[in-house]
Length: 247
Image 1 (cartoon, helix red, strand yellow):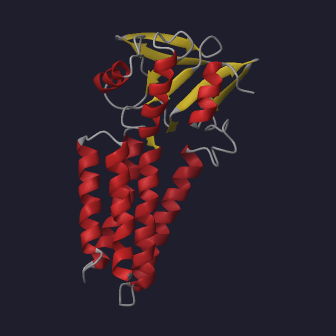
Image 2 (spheres, rainbow, N blue to C red):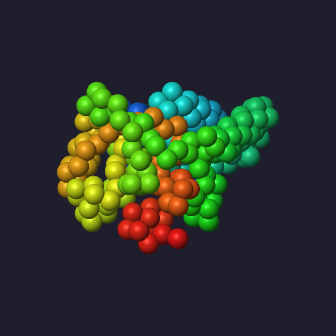
Image 3 (tube, rainbow, N blue to C red):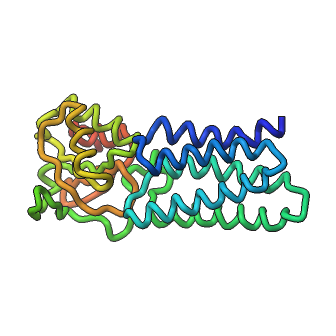
């Protein structure tokens, strides 16, 4: 039973990434790494599985920082990997025990710091939470090489990335209800413009797709009502706001 539990966290992380993210080089490499760690965790080389898991978490956080993109699906996978690392560290009884537990503590601290800096806490309970300094009624974007500014009091802006599973789900519903983008504006914040356009087109969206920088979680809806600009997270809150029946 212990051997099975060694592997299940890494297997679950790999399945999550494969199911929610586009099959780019980073996703394929991450899924392959999860499969390798799952295999190693049931052998006498399980310590290397724990080390590899901690390194994979670090690489995920560094890559998101370099790309200025916050991936909730990646963080969920990182948490599953962390659970596997902690499980292996707790069960380790050899000379690597202290080192593995210290490494697990560092990985947990990195994830916690990242969450506090870049993600709203308890998004279902506090859907309006947003990173400090990110809120503005006017969002600077680029479109076809030209700069522009979107007024979120006129039309709410949905920040999305094509590699975000939750983004795809929301885009499908919004594009089905309003394919012209008369009541909302999708803005790309991660991935290539071609990937973003393909995603929107596949869901029937026919409006423009500008691009901007956003170093926080997606999908996020930036909306200004009664002079107050907010960032909404969570599919139900976003859909309610675009429909115009949010509180």
